Length: 290
Image 1: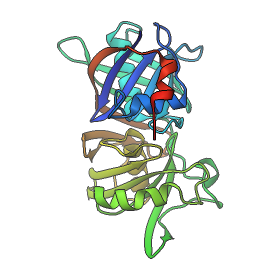
Image 2: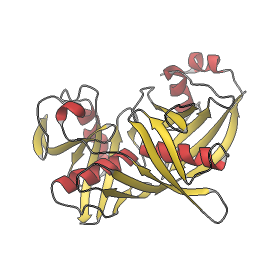
Image 3: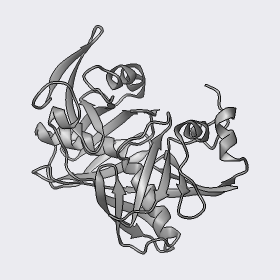
Image 4: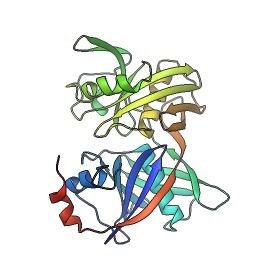
């Protein structure tokens, strides 16, 4: 039987498998079974603990559809909580190797000794199209894009993963309708996350994210970072100050350096349960039907 752990960050939930302690790195087809909420465990993604020479451990990520993003903001906080709570690292500082390099995390523990929240230095915000990646040259700051008979004003930014920030009402039905079209727009050769961002004040925004490879999730850490960076670059939010980002699952707190060299994200995480797969992983793929 293969052990696993279930975690969530503001309702953005993950299966954690530890390849250093009896778990395995599953394949993309097995991931689709594991993430299925009807016949599998149910999750927005699968995180695998792997050894690392660059950091304390390496985090491998799968989305629900079996694709492999470079980074996940809620996922890395869940990943770090698992490592600290189960004694693989001591903290308070933890270095995690990811698809966007080694990221420094700081754990915050409650009176019970367990990790309650994690602050992550998510690295820089990147606006150059070639680095997002996005078709064209230069930056995409408040540019118009047409999809059918709808016109959007977008700002594109990468924070380890590509994001399109749309300054609209943070409405789930709107995200469900337009998210898939923006996600797969030809401008984005690797697809993109879509962030509907509603500015409440210079220190607070509401956000709904249509995640690449997942669809609408209750929270998105990279989306929160991308939205705050996009708001800051057009002068709508403060630099070097924590911005409250309200998502369907709760709030994250994001601070952007004035030169965009670093973005800090702070937010809660929780363990849901520990379990074991009673079936052989090799049988998972054949039982999954789409």
